[in-house]
Image (cartoon, rainbow, N blue to C red; front, side):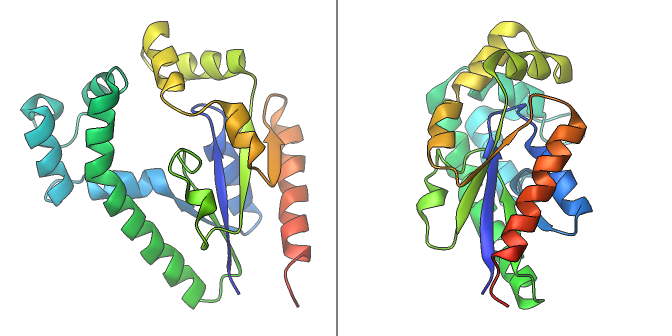
Length: 204
């Protein structure tokens, strides 16, 4: 029977880094953020609904979603963020389940579902999710990495971090925690240990 393992953490904690390491080991990873991009591509109903709700200013001249402009709106306004989630999350959820089902049909035994809001949306309580892995870094490291990767100010960076549940809440429901605050080699060693543990636990 397939195991679906949630992979989450705070923004800029290194979920994508850990996901990439898992793929290198041969793991199947379903990336909710990639699916989120797909459901708002030009021609998709979600993009039209977003433009209607937030105005044409959140679109580029080419008709694609301007994520920076939309992000500035929704991370500063909880009601706006909930409105966006109401448009996108049901579609992301449907695409995720379709992708997971396809991998399971092809014989995958362990599938990681990488998503930022697993705990916020109580996905870890759903029967289809077997366990949760949380990627952890100290708060200052999280802020520093977010400022380094995004062209935003500190106030907006703090707002984006505050829009998610505290990392301690996520760790509280985790079956496994990856400490990504040190070197990549140390993170890679933890990921390999996790992968080996999960594979050994699979029924033969």
